[in-house]
Length: 195
Image 1 (cartoon, helix red, strand yellow):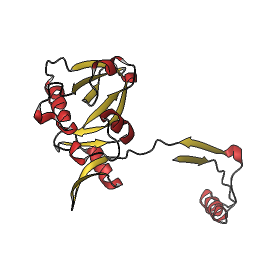
Image 2: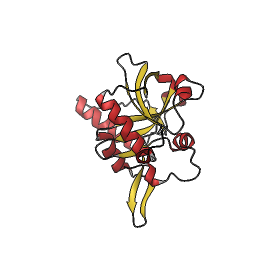
Image 3: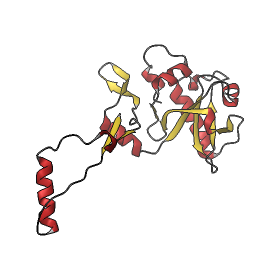
């Protein structure tokens, strides 16, 4: 979305500042026309977050983009950021594809402390992405000693969503990158997004 800023100069006549202001407003309401091009500034606004989550429907749960009011509520809930590694980075070499990666910025702001779970041992309770998120978050929350932990450069990671530990749900903000990481073609299976 693009934001346009218009520079306007209002002038009015009157015996007092209040009267001149009223005159200026009335004149402006008569539509003075567009400002000159040099008085227009264009700003690119960052698109608002769009969340895709598993929502209950009459046919079971389905992955859907939630309306704005739900997105605003999701932004206020306790959550942790989900990442995927960029190609040809140390994280991409070390972390198994389809792993859930949760992280928090470290104190130096150039790095992110991440914990991950890729179910390399084939556990039956870690087959869904949300289950792997819950496991990785548990390690993060308890500072668990594990090899599935690293400090990664912020430039090596792509944020793709959030994990909400209390609700045990995943909200995806970058559907295409998430689907590519998980090797999903078509719609995201809803059962990947909740525990």
